[in-house]
Image 1 (cartoon, one colour):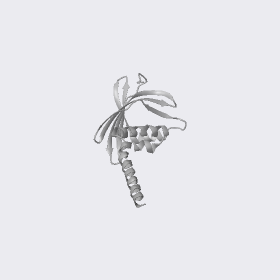
Image 2 (tube, one colour; image 1 turned 90 degrees about the horizontal axis):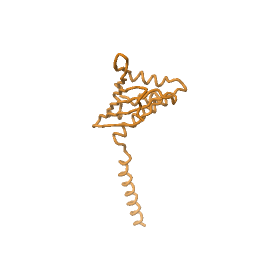
Image 3 (cartoon, rainbow, N blue to C red; image 1 turned 135 degrees about the vertical axis):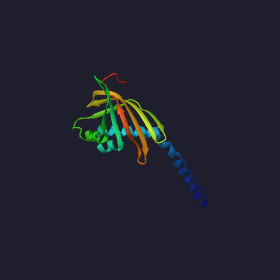
Image 4 (spheres, rainbow, N blue to C red; image 1 turned 60 degrees about the horizontal axis):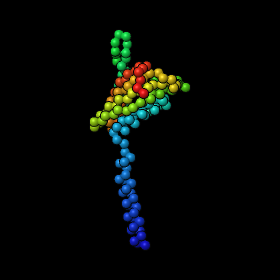
Amino acid sequence: MEEFKLKSKNWILAALLVCLLGFPAFSQTPEQEVEAVIRSLFDGMRQKDATKVADAFSPEGLMQTVQQKPEGTTVGSNAVADFVKRIAGTPEGTTLDERILSYHIRVDGHMASAWTPYKFYVNDTFSHCGVNSFQLVKMASGWKIVYIIDTRRKEPCEA
């Protein structure tokens, strides 16, 4: 009986060790963590969840858009707080859906860059397309967007 208890304890310890060693296989790479932040931003936008949207950004986050005008190209700026308010104030029955076509992510230590072509829909109707360029920093609370600049056009759009 004593030998059975010893074998049982050894078996349990071996099983625990295998489980503990297996956990790193479930951890995300930095690239996956960055992608998760961007996905969370757009999930929050679709859900009109201001907290989820705000949580994707650092408090100092900046937003800009490249604007094509007859007099030339300009860059428009937008405060993250204003963007969050607009998302929260999206009228009932209106869905804003930015569909990311692909993720091109590069990470160096605590800094990351993501290039994400997209198509934007309002209530399932195509509005515009373009590319987002994100800059993220890994802070104590995780990866946060510190800067985003995007382009917007009707066509051509990537497939």
